[in-house]
Length: 326
Ligand code: SF4
Picture (tube, rainbow, N blue to C red):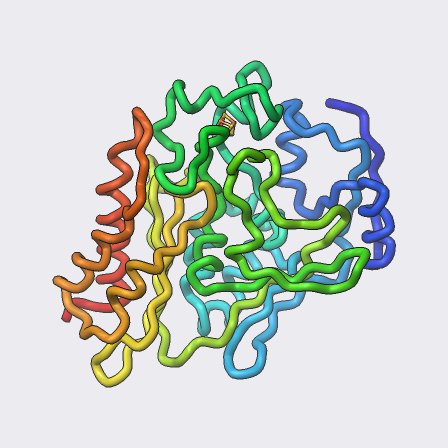
């Protein structure tokens, strides 16, 4: 492995100072250490932030939720407030990785994780994300698992995080702390589509630290859930997935939050599906008609055309599971 310097910090001030000097933050290390072993990442300095006090889950006013960046995936999934308020988050986390990884990996690290494109991890392959300007081996290679939404000529890789799909659906905000103070970004603005610079994946300023993810309050009752479709039933990334949250009052859908995973270069919010649902009465016909819109704008590659119909079916099934058979 490439030689590097390791430093452990115990305050956000020390973390930011180390980040300003170019250090890479690490907590669970489940992504970064893998990539260092494979020769994909070569940080000169690693800054261990696992001792910072960013490990709290708490309800916010009026029923929102704030999850500290250093809360482990397992802790977040099992937390009573997460389970009670937003089961879609718990389900997305429990369908991710393995139990061992969920114990180590953090919420902040999860939303920062890098793509599972095999060419990205193969240092002999052309990859604009790993080596800008070198090309994209996936475009003309084997691209069965790649994106049908949000791709560019430079990169067609999907974003691998399940819980990010739930966060995108719920319009979460990412809390950041940097040399210039605190700021918040909507989840939609935090993760970047590849465009011409696929190597830049998050809208972070140099040295900025993720401190928390906040889910805004939503009207109650709110039914929610996550469905993940994959080649095998454990320890596998999504071919397609759907995060759905519905608020139904008086027999009418008043609020709908829907996003898809496994299909986009970022977690894919589905406003056309949401708009089709709001103001309507739940019914099987409605779920089907709304889900048809999930693949609007899809541009499949040579080997992933199947994802168009699979996405529509995934969304339809999860709408029915969350909204019921009316
Ligand atoms: Fe690299 Fe993106 Fe192409 Fe995969 S899809 S090879 S990550 S540029």
